[in-house]
Image 1 (cartoon, rainbow, N blue to C red):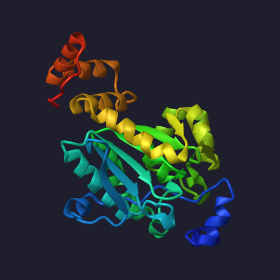
Image 2 (image 1 turned 90 degrees about the vertical axis):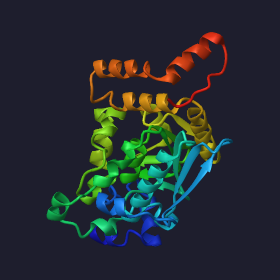
Image 3 (image 1 turned 180 degrees about the vertical axis):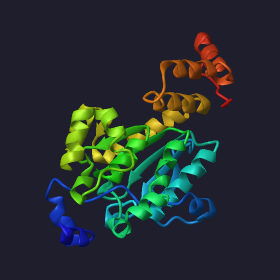
Amino acid sequence: MAGLVRNFFSLRAFTEISRRRTFLQVPALAVKPASYCCSEPKTYTQILVEKRGEKNNVGFIQLNRRKSLNALCEELMLELSHALDEYEKDKNVGAIVITGIGKAFAAGADIKEMEGLDFTKVYGGDFLSNWTHITKITKPIIAAVNGFALGGGCELAMMCDIIYAGEKASFGQPEIILGTIPGAGGTQRLPRVVGKSMAMEMCLTGDRVNAQQALQAGLVSKVLPDEQLVDEAVKTAEKIASYSKVATSMCKEAINTAYETSSERMVSTLKETFTRNDRREGMSAFVAKRKPEFTDS
């Protein structure tokens, strides 16, 4: 196993591993918040970004490490956080789509970045601290999962708000094969979505599930032909972006905190919408049978 890990990034090793039902990837290495705050990259090297949709109101991000199956290295996570913040500040963008280049959404982390870590470095440092940044984005995020979503890649998809899968997509938490466990939500989000038994099986065996199995388990909301995946994700993001950004952000917050807070907190959030102009406009337009004109206020 040690020899296999050392040679993981060679094409020959990948070909051999891909024939099996295990893929040796683990959650990505953290990016220190201090480094992130001080870094303002003008040109991304690990991701591709653009706006899509008829009104350019969809932020579109592609993970761009084709040769390593979009392994989530430190630099990529830094750029992803920066790009998400830019879309968060963009008043025209109402939703975001994340996908991967090539045959993978993200096949986990770059093992070489984690190989030299020990308990002292992990426990005393900022290990995985930057992974939660995506969950702080208030705008809805859709993961368009093409191919592998393994280890940290599966966890990244689960941090998004909606997951669409291509027909060839596969999901897994194979960290157990390397003698470790999922560290970026695999042991928390996965059982909430698919149930304790299936989450235990995935995490304890390292086995993958295919797109249809993920759909049946509730991990994804749609399975689409691979060639239609991105277009359908953008289409849904456009629909979301056409609504009040205030309302969609509040709805996202309410659903994401449903597992952690009481129904009383949800009622409180609902009541808060009644302080917003968009709530008044939306209901007035419905009564008047006209299209609402939201002002995001």
